[in-house]
Image (cartoon, rainbow, N blue to C red; front, side, top):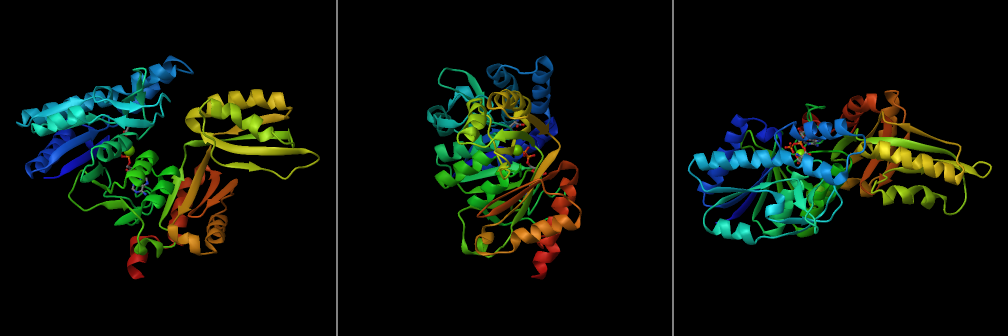
Length: 410
Ligand code: ADP
Ligand code: ASP
Ligand code: MG
């Protein structure tokens, strides 16, 4: 008998009929003799609706109340799935995050899981109950409801799998696995049989929403092999696991894009020690993560500074930066929300040169201007105008020979 954790995303539980489909799959796994814990997301679109309601109510909603609101979508889907399993004759019980509890820190809307109490779950499993857990939510040490950031049910599932030492962790979604790029933009994208934790971390952090980044961090830390697959068929999906020799052989394994960042430039900043800290500390105190940063070459003692922040924090960030800019004597601040980041990722890039120039050349051939560049050992990212995102992804996918037919031909 194995302990199986299965996570079903929003599209997979998007309608009553789809919840019935999920219940049938869960029941099958149980009937095969396994203990089953199911983690579910809110029904498709529900979290977006809740976020819109909060923004309609006020410009800067209280972070605590925001989490109270947006966590509710999952409460609906766990109850419906548990009801469905019960009506099929199975013992099933739903749990909200606070009931387990899934203990997190207090960073509302991006809380980190610290501990999962397994006592109640273990007792229920012992008497043959199927456990249905609300993804995305937790509770902090003061008893406040918290949420784990968009896409956070993936992290709930991997954390449950790690915490209870599950034998299998399956993430069921609306595509057959992890592809060389988003298959909705490039239908020729190839499904990967396996991908290393490090590559998946880069892909997730660079915008590939198929797994939330923290779920991959958890999986890597606790050695959980994550199987990403479709909830609509039985095809084998993609294993996210430790790097092996086959993976190193591939130069570029994927292309990602992210339209969720915005760019902020601060002009004519006095170029002296401590300035960067003066500009970035207030942002970090406000819990805003800054991603790419470029500082221009100094000219007559002044420089320009450009950086990116999550779009969700953009309004807050601009307000903060405008104040600091005044304090440090900069000449002005300008924001741009119509940008996108396209990136190429691959562990094989560590030992090859020429990848960056091929990327720049490919974008140049389409007349796509690059605003910012950043690199790491296994990725290169470019900020471009967001209207070119799909085009950039398509031409890069082609240039690096990632389409199904290209890979087969090799
Ligand atoms: P769920 O609701 O199941 O959590 P998500 O919408 O969060 O599903 O993630 C699945 C989606 O991720 C797919 O529908 C696909 O459009 C997108 N996606 C982006 N990049 C990739 C990729 N490299 N491989 C597979 N899917 C990707
Ligand atoms: N429902 C949450 C969201 O839409 C969490 C998730 O689906 O993973 O972000
Ligand atoms: Mg998701």
